[in-house]
Length: 170
Image 1 (tube, rainbow, N blue to C red):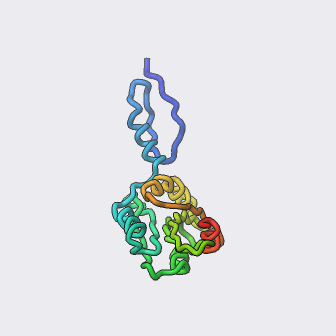
Image 2: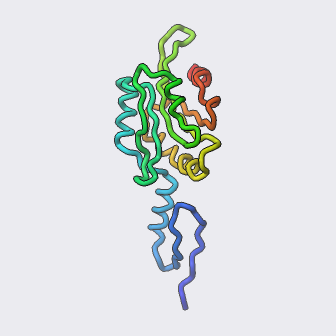
Image 3: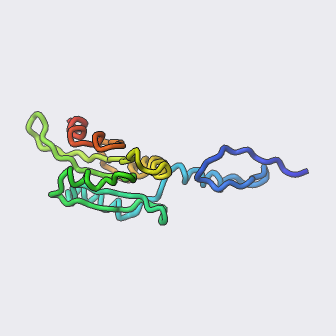
């Protein structure tokens, strides 16, 4: 009598094979865990973020997902003199990105402060596959960047403006 087939839920990131009740399912569990945790993060991304956070070497960093390497990589940095407009102008109209922006401001008590914002940029005009890939990788990537104060999710420029950052930071 042939072994019974297991019925497992469908997941788009997992190669589906028919497992019998006699075959181990650990490999499938590992595949599901990796799919749920998102893309790997390049060491350069972590290093540049630490430089932004500790040394104030950059005003912003933009990251993208390299589909070939299956990891998040650095796309662009803006030096300490860069403006918010520079940052916003480098978020593509039709593709997703992650961004980190070091927002300097003065409090009501006249104190100079700095807060680091994580921006998940996913415009409505980007491809559905890109939106899904970026959404499923966001949490893991954000955890890799220790020191983020606030997170913004934006689909158009009005959702990630300086006024929104100012309101969140105060």
